[in-house]
Amino acid sequence: MTREPKRGLARNTANYGDRDFALYLRRSFAKSMGYSQTMLDRPVVGIVDTGSGYNNCHRTVPELVEAVKRGVLAAGGLPLAFPTVSLCEPSLFPCSMHYRNLAALDTEAMLFAQPMDAAVLIGGCDKTVPAQLMAAASVDVPCLQLVTGPMLATPFQGERLSACTDCRRYWADYRAGRVSRERIGEIEGRLATTAGTCGVMGTASTMACLVEALGMMPLGHGSIPAVHADRLRAAEDAGALAVKLINEPVRPSEIITRESVENALRVLLALGGSTNALIHLTAIAGRRGIRVDLARLNELSDTTPVLVDLKPTGEGYMEDFHAAGGMPALLWELRDQLHVDCRDVTGAPLSERLAEPQFVDRRYIRARNEPVSAVGGLVALFGSLAPRGAIMKRSAATPALFEIESRAVVFDGLEDLANRIDDAALDVTESDILVLKNAGPLTPAGMPEAGYLPIPQKLARAGVKDMVRMSDCRMSGTAFGTIVLHIAPEAAAGGPLGLVESGDRIRMSVARRTLDLLVDDATLARRRTAWRAPERPPRGWDRIVAEQVLQADEGCDLAILRAGG
Ligand code: FES
Image (cartoon, rainbow, N blue to C red; front, side):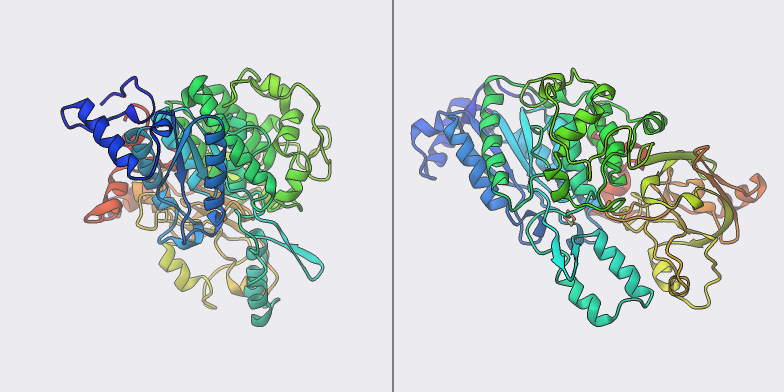
């Protein structure tokens, strides 16, 4: 199918074999909604509405939709909002990642099939923005991203709390017996007290910043708090800009380029951002046929300092980042390392958007010569345990654990982990390496954020706060610790991780970027003979995922959805 060179409602008429009749029918049904002919003659801006009773992070979407509509109407367009799949992290089984590609497919199909000349994509919670950008990159309709924005931190008894780094910190203290049941219950009501996405530099915030770095959102719009009036003004601006994109199109294919993807990688490293964002950026780039190379990530990481001091790696919250200057200030700091010819949705190159020095509060956005860390937040490891790579967020890890050779304590899957991690009889010491396998994208678990394996309770109660942990799954962008993730190929794909047994020795060197399983070839060959691939689910979305999902180094997209299929 190809798009007709028409505007507004005349685009993509339904196939009745008579285009004039199809348009006549469409108009007559549209009139049943009370639109005048004048309105129906306007160019159309589609608004992706991801409001959902299941999605607390998108609680403000209804008012954002109204503000976008205002902007579209004032600029001479006809705004038409439509619902798509909405994904909220804690609301989904087995995990939201399992459905990111479903949301991307849904959004892609609706952007393609419905008549619209431009679109505003309203996302926020972790998987929604990547899904929308994947769709936009594939359909290539002129569009821009709007996010719901971060929640505000809550003052509480002399400290500030926000989802979800503080959730994890308090939960770890509760497991270790340092916090009572009553106290953890009280904290539960103080972690997320306003609308918006998690208030730290987790996945949602990282993705919002990367959208600015890519150019799919005007500079400065990503970090505006969800409940700030500026958020509504940003929505109104988005509506007006969408109409401008109809008259002066800048398509995603002109914005999401090899250079802008590299800019986004730089920003990810300078943010000390979420490991998940790497998978999402890889998937978005993959929709344009651009490969994110983990070896290149390491090169960038060696030359990109962490400049942003926010939780989970630092101290501040997203509202601090925004007040400190946000992305304009960060990009200004990095400007000589960026491809400044990249255009954004306004059509302007980055050099023009960064023409002036930006306001900056150094408490949260550091100067290059006084970084939080001299090197980037993420590093890729390769070796016999991870032939296609694994990721560590070194900015959230314990440097004393970076060079280690130790014994593996292996869990065969999530159920095994839940059953044994707190068993007093578990043979484990703080110098062991905890290994979780069979939790990657091909498994029914769907690559959950389980890579932040809990410290075994007996060790936590003895005061152990960090251990080396490894898996083929992910961790929340709000989590921290010496954690190796996204091991590829995953265990369920026949990767070496599937052959690891308790008692094996593993050697990791962050300095050398290596991750090796120290088991001889004959033993591994014997284990491989006994290894069996997991059974595929019988039907439905689970079956499609099992047949199509790619590994972490390819962004976990469905193979058929990548550029060229
Ligand atoms: Fe939605 Fe954290 S749960 S952004």
